[in-house]
Image (cartoon, rainbow, N blue to C red; front, side):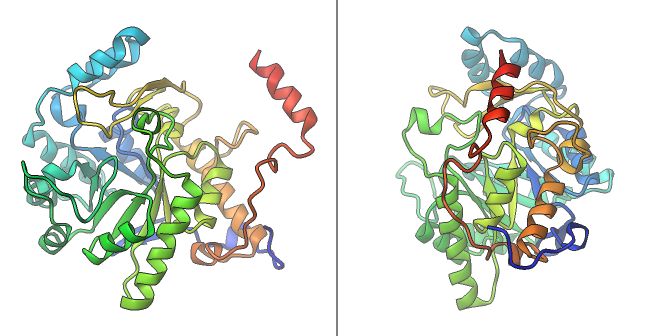
Length: 364
């Protein structure tokens, strides 16, 4: 809802901090091979955001990942799932982990990397020594208490103590689970199970929670934990955001930052130049996530900071966020997290008969 006082959008603060790391834009690039490579991470860092490089993807499995990405992008629908399972069977090379991190840091921008929980402890020292600024431990669903007889559960508390850089864990959608992860010492929590355009978790497993509910619940856990301990853990909404309005609503629900995938796959600088596919399922017998084609829509600068050349909300996410803060009377993101919200499924289409007709005509 709009505020009773409005503020000049040029005078609001949308910066984001995670321990000593400060970003001008509270936008993270998702750790997906279709989106982030070294060049993309460098460009996103120069624009004020943070791209997360996937340490379990093609960038650390192949010395030259470009031909692999090209094969995935050009594969037919009938063969792409089998090709993805084949490509990701290649083992990760620790040498490439170090090389990719150093290449990003050499450009003078922050570097974040993502690993599956099973490899987090063994990679921690390598990641930190190579110069990474953030370690993201990411799985389809992550908890502080995982039971298994065949392998040792990762201790987030031990990992957080081991590293001088912040640890971000996810994904999570539940108040109590988020609270337990915070108590382990993580600096941030990724929120979201299955909302992404290239994710098949909800279709394959039937598991997930709508992002508004999930973000609000985890944000409530953050506030409860902060009130008790004085330590603020960042809430990062991950996936399901297509346009500026989605990004703005994520912050209004309580997010401190957002992680975006498919919209950034449409950037001219993306690793795949217009394709994206899920990364969360390491089981070779399950789909890794469907490959989607978003096409090259704009430069990364236009998507993140404008100027927007289209009217559909797919460009200038930062400008949309600043304007939303302004019309809601919020000087910074923490104030914006306290704005009043309403749930109204028809609000986007209310009174928009001619816009709807125009978009239908454009789609024919």
